[in-house]
Length: 536
Image 1: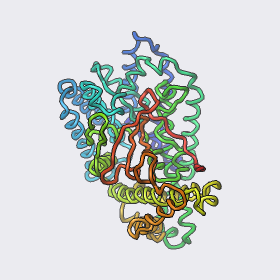
Image 2 (image 1 turned 90 degrees about the horizontal axis):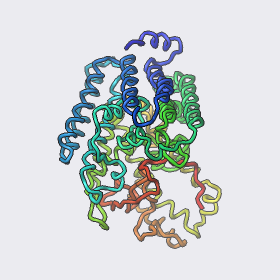
Image 3 (image 1 turned 180 degrees about the vertical axis):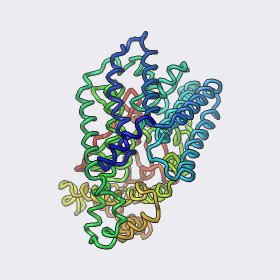
Image 4 (image 1 turned 90 degrees about the vertical axis):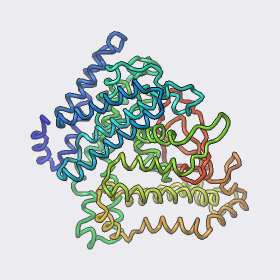
């Protein structure tokens, strides 16, 4: 923690939390390190030097900002994973037990920080440990997958298998790859291996100037927004007497929308600083002229999302890949060729649970995830029942809502108003304060969600709407493959995505899970640039 005092003094002058400056300093440092990294030739004889550079750079960053004891904790975790996977690579239980160990160790750090070190900084080395857990657990599963035949693997796992066990230097070069060391994006070993060995698509890369400047520009703009407005427009202010007692209802709702945008700008800044560093080193290149491998958020897709599913698909992209490949698909048993798997609700429950524990144990997180489940259920209900009713060829609402884009606009408006309300406990961590703020706006979005869910499913209105859709020439929510439900294929955070039948969602009971291959050849998802859609 060599520069704590200078950062503290600067934070006081700027009226900015020291944790924010600490995180920004670590991320910005990736750029000068990236320039030096480019001076090392990418040819085979210099590959060990590139591994060593990443290790040294990440160590210097860690020692400058965090306690040295935390580094040895991370080092010990990595060594445990390396040794266990080396000696037990063919044993399916090894990656499973290692996964439990990593999540358990991270959970202990969370509990220790929250219970015993009440004054602990929000940005400490547990943030780095979160990324390390993703890297190490995905590495363990990929090593095990490398000992299996391709017929035993889901298509999504085939692109990340490790057939050749790496040496210790290569392994730590991956673990301590400096552009992704602090806040991600979470990367897989196979992708790092292809990059460091200049395999396709890294053998031919276009100019990185524009991608670097684009990510850097977005990061700087997001930082300016957060520094300029973060102290005055935030969810903490929603707990003030002025907000709770003096603001009229409309002003409270409007204020929460801006507070949500300002809160997200911190994530946009961090993830884009990291993406820019990935692009600078060349790791962000995903082929076909695209630079999406380092992206962890689709800002336009999130801000203009017309459905809850689109919101989820645009946020924390690489963590979603990890949850799917290292949790969900490990719970679901791959069926014989030509058959369909029926994972049921257990796989989805485990995935949600791991996601919640990975974030930490602040009570607000769990309140948020609980309400988010309702939010997603309502989104599915509307998509399954209301959409066929509106989009039926002879529907009287179609000329008004579809060609004008009004249907998509109303979806976006509902999503935006709701998510900026629901995210309060996630940001503030506390349930009591969150409920107080929600009470100030009469729990309106939450009550609306419950009402829509109850009316559509509880009172059978959804069935009635689907009946009218059929009468007006629609399919009543039926799919082209003959199954019922209004959902499109589930857009997971991977190009080799999974298609969910029965309503199009994984959380429904008895879903049918099928693999769908993608045209992408690198196993990476290209974030979808979603705008408010005009359905035809």
